Image (cartoon, rainbow, N blue to C red):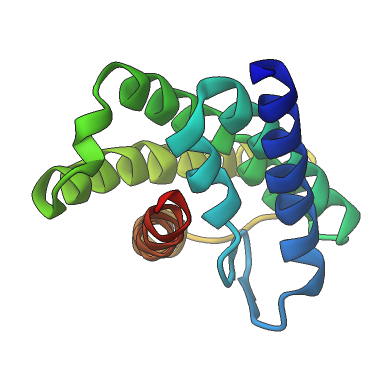
Length: 170
């Protein structure tokens, strides 16, 4: 029974992760930075459930960005979500009470979205230094747009996801 539930939740959240980048009307793309409304929500909800669901959903949302025709650098940024989703899911598996109050939930969001932002910056930096890359964006812009932008965007999506999760859990 548990494997059926896990498979069903993974499939639903993965489907949401694939569809959101394709159908969301608000997509802001500035160079290697992109901000798609609620794009992290399925990954965060999956993270609240289990490591398996979190990783499957992060991989599925990567497929969504690919199928939606986003530039390959943004697809690889989406792939980096496996890192924060996996870490967060394992952490919550060990300490589920981190979601119990606003202070610990906010700290969890800050730590995970910092990992999230660092991972996405590393992806962009790797692409920036590839010989075939024609990226001319200054490092400061990469850290501000991708790093700080991801931190803020991820924190907003974390709050949306925790509200949805709390509502559904009741």
